[in-house]
Amino acid sequence: MSIIGFVKEQLENERRCSLLPINVKAYVKLGATILVESGIGTSVNIKDSEYVDAGATIETDRTSVLAKADFLMSIHALNKVDLEKTKTTVCCISFLDPFNALEHIKWLQESGRSALSVEMIPRSSRCQKMDALSSQASLAGYVMVAKAMSTLPRIFPMMMTPAGTLKPSKVFVIGAGVAGLQAIATAKRLGAAVIAYDTREVVAEQVRSLGAKFLAIDIGETGQTDQGYAKALTPEQIEIQQQAQAECIASSDVVITTAQLFGRKPPLLIKKDVIAKMKPGSVIVDMAAESGGNVEGSVSGSIATVEGVTVIGTGKLGKRSCVGCESNVCQ
Ligand code: NAD
Image (cartoon, rainbow, N blue to C red):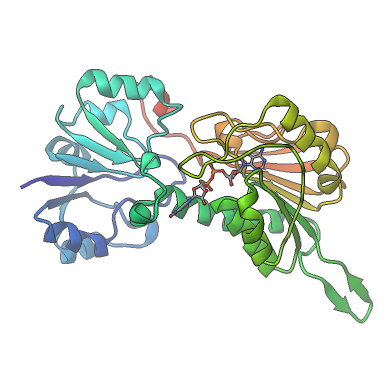
């Protein structure tokens, strides 16, 4: 009988965990033995006893879970120190960041261990239940609007008071994929006036159906890949886009950028000279910061001030507490 192991996440501030008691029953039904590191659910207020009641076995020793498991499931890729304690035949399933963590992938391959990257699961309706990218992008789109709203020194909705009327804040969303559409919907629900742009014209209708305006920019042929991902623009097209959206950015209170290219560095879409035209105190959220950034001056996992504008760069929440591992997965 295969043993599936679940260990606690090692990143500081990471609250997610890879197993809920409700899932244990499904795995057990498939004939697997479920081994869980004690305390795995503490960050989401789930007690060890709830996993036991669902049919899992709790281990207080992390090494023991690592050593016994045939499959290991986690949110983030396990680091080298952990992996060295596993069977060489183990199969690890997690986010793997396969286009950036090249050293780590090479090490896995050389050591004979297998790994499945949830990022590589096709984005088709058939695989929807396993679409970890969409589930996280959707939540991130929502959270980033909430962060922008709490940072902006004015409110989102129009407000009529006896002393006067406040206009709604203007939110411009660049990139209307999963995260962008959720950001548009959230900002609309909060009462902002929302405009969006994406190089894939097919999403214009989806943007309008959420009550937002679609910024029309003629940059010539764009298109999308068979998987539905955007194709990279030429430098000339990027320049046209930068110029055409500059006015919209300058008049916005909040700009949220989500423009990504699968497996490639995201395009730089907002330069400092355009940021300088925004009102002081405005907010930019760069949701592509972790993979290279859409915004000049954004820092992944940090909040920076660029030309008087607050630039929130999404990214890793904290550092992994891993000693003695030189793999880039631990950085
Ligand atoms: P993504 O994270 O790769 O990119 C985000 C958005 O940025 C995309 O909409 C892309 O077109 C846009 N973008 C790229 N360059 C840009 C630029 N220069 N300016 C403005 N926008 C730019 O995309 P995603 O959110 O992961 O979605 C990828 C595809 O997968 C989409 O077509 C989506 O509809 C599809 N999808 C399908 C399913 C399904 O079940 N069928 C589920 C999820 C996603």
